[in-house]
Amino acid sequence: MRIFSGIVLFFILAPVVAVSADAQSLGSFELQGRPKIGKTVERVKRKRFYLFAGGLAANKPLIDRLKAATPQSRDCFYCQMKASPEYIDWLKAEDCESPYCRAITAEDAKKVPEFKAAYQKGLGVRQFKGKTDIALTWLTTNLTPELRDGFYRQRKSLLETMLAGLKPVQTSMTDSGKGSNALFVDIPLKPVTAGGKATETFLYANLIPIEIGQKSYVWACEIEIGAAKRAVALLKVPEANKPVSKCDVIVRDLPVCTAGACSK
Image (cartoon, rainbow, N blue to C red):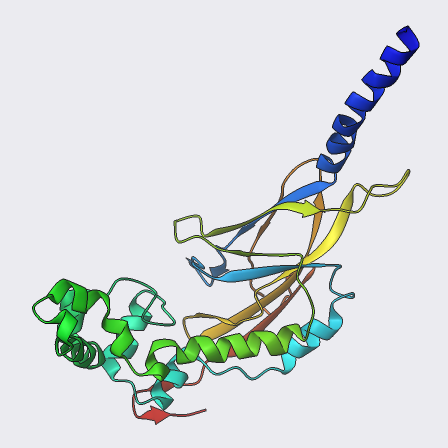
């Protein structure tokens, strides 16, 4: 009877042991989006980063695509769409890429020609008449598709080209607070073999250029992630022509684009 009880107890505890083993093969990674550019610490907010298995060498085809790409800047896209200077300035004020970035206020609807026209069009719709708050809330539905989400669709197409079918392990977006951190959790890790290293090499990259000042930046960097503790990395840029360790940072000058005049 004692033998039977021991067998039952083994099968009851076996799943618990398996879960514990699985839990030990997960890692976490915190990316701090606060690169120091010159003397200024910039905060990279609301930007998406991707995590891939393998390091720089394993992901060379991806990095080659990132280097060969010629993405259009935000200002040049909206310049090409004949957006007003007020519209472009509204986007730049909070580093927005579309009008969905933040709430459009009544004051915005007065100052930005595109917002004003869309708001007035909304008031002309039967169900919005006399309901100014609702017309303001639904203002974006009356913008032209190019101004509403054209840049997003262009960036989505660029992302698909950069990935070329490659599947990231995870993606995460930097927050909008002072930390500007992106957190990756429950990252699946390969089992650690006897005598093997306790971490696994991954690559983090933003894929879509991040515009800061008069330049754009694409980071592709290695990070070692293990189960014992959270891995942490800070975005860095090359200084004095010195590359960033274990990183390929693609820096491009942004073209000068203002409403009605785009130059390379």
